[in-house]
Image 1 (cartoon, one colour):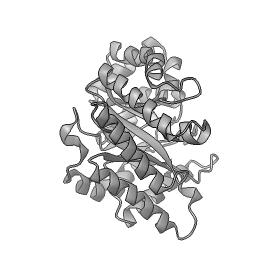
Image 2: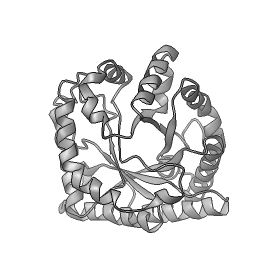
Image 3: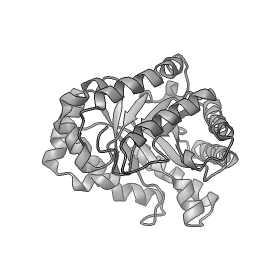
Image 4: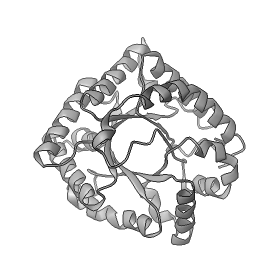
Length: 298
């Protein structure tokens, strides 16, 4: 990924998020009982190739690194990175004081058993730590949506297996945060709220700490007019998380993307930032993320 404009983008993003970040920093939500605070801002790169470019041109995003807390890796990308390359990256992350934020599978076609899902992925996670990395968080990739909508296994099943997954992760990585990513508006606000409450109750009954964060993947291009009503429903989910002392994490991405125009990605996350701020939304964590193999220029 060419990084010639990433510093300018970082300055603009900082201007957008500055007021919201200051407000959120003054509040105290889920962090009191957790091993470490939830990083305020985390980022990813769309592909392994673009990650390589970012690590190879570290001088071009020095300012951007100064206000992020971690970098997001998809578990599926890890096998495509050599030990030699990964060792170099882990050294740089340590030097920059950045944590590894992982997006992982809890309930998927390849495993619907939560504990088995951990066993199948743990070798790749341990490889990161053996090469010098520190895992800051595990974000489960839509376990409710996968179990209930795609696989028709039911919400009871989703709760049971997600709790089992979280328990296995907490035993293996007690200092890491664990959270859930779910989609909106695919699921209604009431469904998100019910899912959060059921999952928290399942964790409590199992003697486990509750969710450290709940991350919403908002496909805002699907919103109908008036769009602010839909953003207010996102705020309802944020408010419920805070009532349950769970950090609220929001993905910022170009839902309306045009893969032929890099600026559409920038315009998209800036639109989302303003739209959510306009309804009073102040997430505890901003996730600047793309899984679309673009933008080429950040």
